[in-house]
Image (cartoon, rainbow, N blue to C red; front, side, top):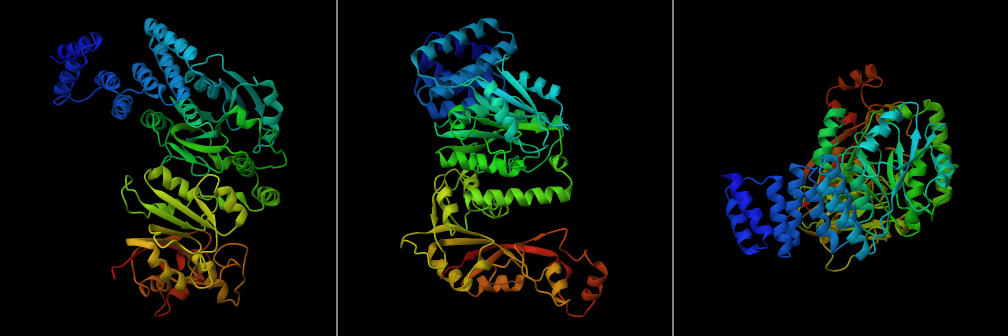
Amino acid sequence: MKGDAMDSILQLINEGMWGRALEEYLEYTGSHELDDKLCIMGATILEKYGEYDDMYELICHGLKLNPENYELYLLLGNYYAGQNVNKAYLSYENALFYANRSGNEEDGKQISEIMDSFLAENEVTVNKVSVILLEDINGDSERCREYLLENVQDKEIQIVTGRNEMKDAFGHIFNSFISELDEENDILLLSNDVCMLPNALFNLRMELYSDEKNGACGAILNNGEYYQVPDDGNERSFEKAKAFARENNLPDKNSGEIAFALDNRCSLFKREALSEITPLDEDYKLSLFLDHDICLSLIKRGYASKACHNSYVFSTVDKDKKKNDSLVYTNVFAADSCLAKEKWGFWPDYYSNSRVDLIEMITDARDSAIKVLEVGAGLGSTLSRIKRLYPKATVKGIEIVERVAEIGSRMINMECGNIENYEFASDEKYDYILFGDVLEHLVDPYKLVDRLKGCLSDGGCIIASIPNIMNAGVIYELLHGNFTYQDSGILDRTHLRFFTLNEIKKLFTERGYEVEETTGINRIDQNTQVNGDFWEKILAIDGVADRVYFDVFQFLVRARKTAK
């Protein structure tokens, strides 16, 4: 019965009887679950009627059921044909890849003809891809090549191999080998500990060509740097990673997240953009700083870098194993940090930190049109993540460091200013105002928190992270006569105000807010387990606070404006 009904719909489509085809399709799918074949039929009918949004949704649903269905990629190409010819061509290319893999030569021929016709009628500017394979002693180049070739259309893909003698930075390798590659090809930088998974490179290319001003895209990994990990944060075994890739590496219009550093283990660069920033800086010894340098250089020349969250690959090596001896690493880190500060005028790694912990305290549904202000927004990494997770969100950042704000403003809505004397428009209202380690730097955070009620919507929230002056590390030193300011941490020399949990609560409750949630963040090197005998004696004193208050390094708080 099922086969007869589907055959009837298909026949009506082939005969161009679209009205009847639609009627029978709707009747049938009203009582039957969709499979990938029904999605093909439905998308084909919707294309005929110009219902492109619904067509796209059906294509995506079908690919969730069968991510190797070449007919769906063909339809995806048709969907993009009127919007972005490069993405259309890449979709046709992926359709051909899966048609050939399935052994359907006749359909493969037809797809090739469609591609040739499309190229003749449109100005497609998609480049082929060349690969620089970074060899590391912990990786497996043969396995890396095997998975790469298994998951790319072009089996003649150009690959050059560079041994990573410096064990981390790759600028010298990149500069040495780029001249050997076809000068018109985009460049995939791939570490030999990475296994390419199905549709990962396809989706990287789709994101790269989604906008002419995208200069680079990076995959997410099971142990990615710069929060280039799955949103659930889980690390997976290789078998589970392959299953996850099948579910994750699917079309997603909102997969790209503006990045200020990309994990170099799997990054794709558009050749046009790359030519404007090469040769890469070879003075850096650690990839941490070169990764930032590349993205900032691209931004300076008008290009964006994107973390591509529907491109998941698997690294077989623990990233921490790549670090050298800790003392050597510390010394090299300090030297590279100074180099970056001298070059850019600020510490790129510090100002590109994404405050995932603050985002997790947002309570609205992901489809909500929330308005978010971040104070001390840095380059805008946190706001960029919010824009991806909440596509309808409106965001704005205020950053006091002029050079940081200037670069950040090229990628996201950002202004330079001091929040304590910043003038808001009379109608400027936000659902959330974020402070990531900011309030303790202010002259009068109490006055500001009170003033910001006028900038919050009804029921709007302040979300903040604030250091805990009651932390065990601070109190231990204080009871030994020391209160020494440092370059960073709780006793950062730029901190003007200090808070315990009780004082944090009073900061908000005494100014018309309800504290809805507080969460403590601990550090393994600053808690009551360090100098344990000392703390057992302190905690035994009658009236002393519980251990948990000394273990916390900083508190996260969400405080909601109460009704008048």
